[in-house]
Length: 239
Image 1 (tube, rainbow, N blue to C red):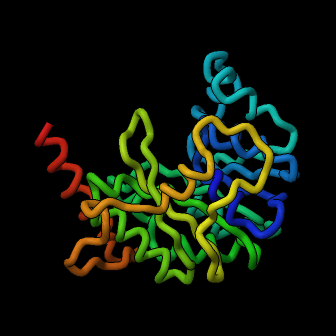
Image 2 (cartoon, rainbow, N blue to C red):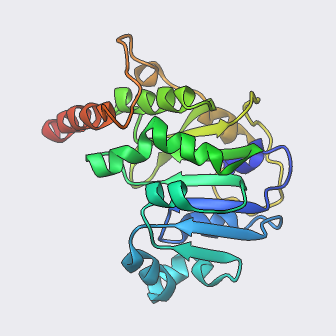
């Protein structure tokens, strides 16, 4: 999520987190002194309650769920975006589970991303969790193509996550922008430095867009779920 801050032209003040009920993304957001308010939309009240009250998780998220700048909505993010009357946001973090069913697949459609776009300021940045570009190559680039079809400018990137392996994300804005190469803010960072930041935006040959045509994920086709099921089932069977 840090590249979204580095790509922002100013100092983001109003933050939207979709998913992220464990409070870990929030923990990182609150490192930035410019942040004045955070809205979190997570479907599961059990998760947000656990993150708020369970000692081990509170220790892990550094009590982020108790921060007075936070407002939590336990709602479906699709419905919340469709109905919420809210001021636009400077930065959004979209951290949903992978699209392994149609209920989740709708959160990766052009309809969803256009609703997200309507909640962002013109100079906003956002980051999207996009599954593994190594294991689910077509799925990953389907999400990238869907974001572009929704009107976003996209910088794909990947990192190695200890518990997941190589994992993919998308950094997006509503206007053309340069890939961030500088750490703009003085915040404590355990992994990212300027060398690793630049490396995030490089993809090995086996993670680049495949040669075959990839469809855009729309609410009326949900092609992403089919890509995802096919690719991850091959991985499961090969283990």
